[in-house]
Image 1 (cartoon, rainbow, N blue to C red):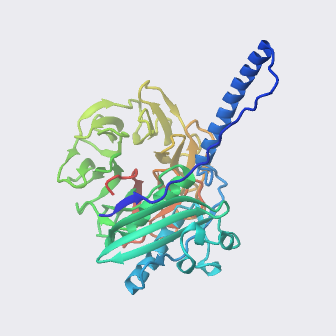
Image 2 (image 1 turned 90 degrees about the horizontal axis):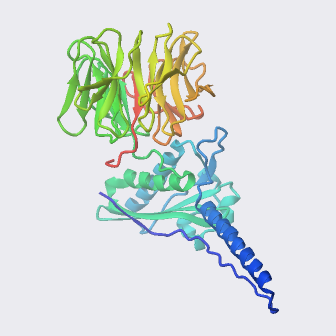
Image 3 (image 1 turned 30 degrees about the horizontal axis):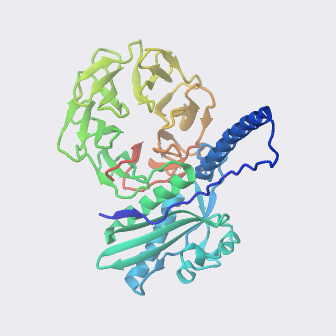
Length: 472
């Protein structure tokens, strides 16, 4: 395992106000008025200084809620090898390349071509006094990351710094120590620090994605890291497995499986050999964990029409959440667990509805088209992503929870289904047949930078993004 300690502290200027006094002694009422004015002025100044401090600490580099976001130019030169060994030099090159790849994946930063660099921190130095910041602003870099590495006896020490080249200011500096195999963990930990400094959010760097793949010839659940690395097969039922769903702590997966010849819900602990099965008559599908609770919603048809029920983590029914004519499926919880989006055909076509679980009130969210499905509530709680069929093709949409601002994110690229939000709300993963067989893709929350996440044998569908996992 690696250890981390803060190597630098950000400093913020303090301001002291001085009130000048007149030599002549004023009358009492003048003095009293002056005291009031000074007191009022002091309050105003205090507020201004407080606002200034907030502004200095604010995250005004990147606003991930801005649909017209312009990527911030960032330069990441090769890290400096602290001793002249080939092993260390190779580690320095691979670590800087990994950092570039990981930060570029976020879709928030524009990486400057190293061929344009006018300076090599490996030669000139990696700390502010040794950096000619004008050499970086001249090539368009507004941000700069420098790094130094030391490798000795299978142990590594990595020192990384993020600079604002325009202000010539250190934004964050960290030193990490660990084993040689900890390279990716170290880089991701620093990426989290970088994105926190730029956006105020820790990003996506300890999250995972569950999905269905036919790599083995059957539909099984796999997981991978947020960027497609470290693919792991989770189930081996040799049948059909569908609809994976993460618990908030990332320790449990719920899913639909046909292991017993019909659709049942399985609840599986990912590291311990325990879990539960919801095996009711009829069909049991589309599980969805309640945020921060050991409970989940699922669609069960044992009483006739498929209705949505609230279950314990052991699979026991707590209560019925929907009770109207028609099929109710695909529940998705708001981040606070107070509301639930779901799909129903109660109006004759499949539309998305929202239910307030506390009051029992329901309202229809979508009205266009005849087949809207797979709602997924955004982490910020203000939007819902979903798939809609138009002229025989599915595309990804995002709509406000009040029904306004419906935006289509995919166009003319096969069938695009099963949207799922990254934990910070900046990205959406989905499945698409744009290259023939279905694959998992990622795009920004506004439909930009659409790219394939990973490639495995067979097809990949039904992605589901976890929250950031502390155990990763």
